[in-house]
Amino acid sequence: MPLIESHSIDYVPLAERHGKVWHLWPIWFSGDAHLATLATGAIGMAMGLGFGWSVIAILTGCALGTLFMASHSSQGPELGLPQMIQSRPQFGYQGALLVWCFALVTYVGYTVFNEVVFGVAVQDLTGMHLSQTALIGVFSAFSLAALAFAVAGYDMIHLAQRALAGFVIVALLIYSIGVVRVAHGLPQMGMGKWATIPFLVQFFAVAGYQLSWSIYVSDYSRYLPRDVGLVASFWWTFIGAFIGGAWMMLVGDVAVAIFPGHEIVGAVLATGNLVFPGFGPILVVLSSLSLVTITTLNLYGGSLTMLSIVDSFHHIKNPGRARLIALVVLGAVSTALSALAGANVRELIENLLSVLIYLFTPWTAINLVDFFFVRHGHYSVREIFNPDGIYGRWNWRGISAYFIGFLAMVPCFSTPVYVGPVARMLGGADVSMLVGLPVSALFYYVACRSIDLVAERAHIAIADAGLEA
Image 1 (cartoon, rainbow, N blue to C red):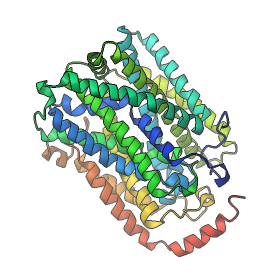
Image 2 (image 1 turned 30 degrees about the vertical axis):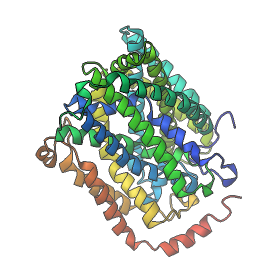
Image 3 (image 1 turned 120 degrees about the horizontal axis):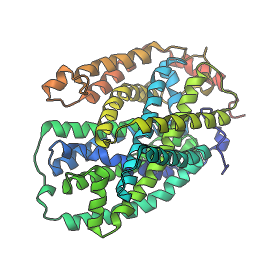
Image 4 (image 1 turned 90 degrees about the vertical axis):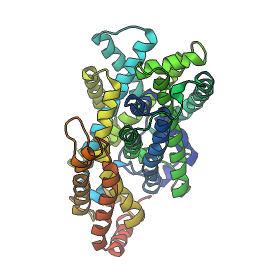
């Protein structure tokens, strides 16, 4: 294993492929089982939804979002490229800037959110209210730890996630068994009150949270051998992300059900200590370590996305060095923004999730339809990096499908700034995801009927001749 990864957005040759397909399970289990995920599971209970209904909303929403997220995983072994650079065949060499800029905002947004959550955890663990200067120091230390793994790159990230997964599973098992024992008979732990709006908000918040991982997925499967198979890569990713995400969200759900007046991290500390004295801090510390490594994924993916943006205007000659520079820039910017972010974690995650659903619902539909139903995984690696190649600079099909899907979602938007007419009819519930996915997918598929795929595949064979040599 090299000390520092040499690749960035460039193609990973078959001779350098390595790893097992089951390695995708721990990368996404640990990627979801961390402190930031807790807050997503607590949204419905905070709005008055009964505990049992909240559990159903979490499990079903998690299944829906993870279904689309895991479908991207097979693109990595097939193409040997990071996730976002694969948007060029659908949007064009420079048209893909549209989704890359949104993705970069997402990476930075999640990094800021994770640092804020970590700051809250430190204060809850120590029982101290930290000054702004001390918090900046905490954010900086957190960012440096995440950067260290990101600098090492792909193999180190996989190794760290596998190591963490075992410890986190043991801690979550102890917590789950203990909570069943101590919470048995509590009135708030039954099905509770049904409330349509909180149920829908919880369901789509969870689905959007899981869907937002779509922009990461191929980054961590692109070194796998091509013959691992589409089905295997999907299921190992799905199982890891679903179990890690749903389990951690349910921990947050249980915590706020037992201690409804507490901030989410404080509630987990308190419920953990009910299992046995001192277990709460152990659980929070382990979840914080997972928070460090998922922030590594944010910085790593963010650096690749930033380089994709740069590559649209200037060819990157030294991808390894460029990746390191991008990492330092993202780490500094994220830490500065964390110092400005509010401490209300639940409000922060709700606002972030509402934006993510809108930005990536059309993209994930277009990207998956292109891979599975239009081009069936046949792409030219060299043409993806050719500004005058077969995919063009601006692809009207992908761009049009994106904006049409996005506009179709607008009546369903429900944000602090704007509530659409459909959302008002539903009492504020946001169902835009159910509209954007089919509209974008259908329009893109129909628009692609005019592509001469036979001629395109013949061109691909010529363009990629000798690629491995």
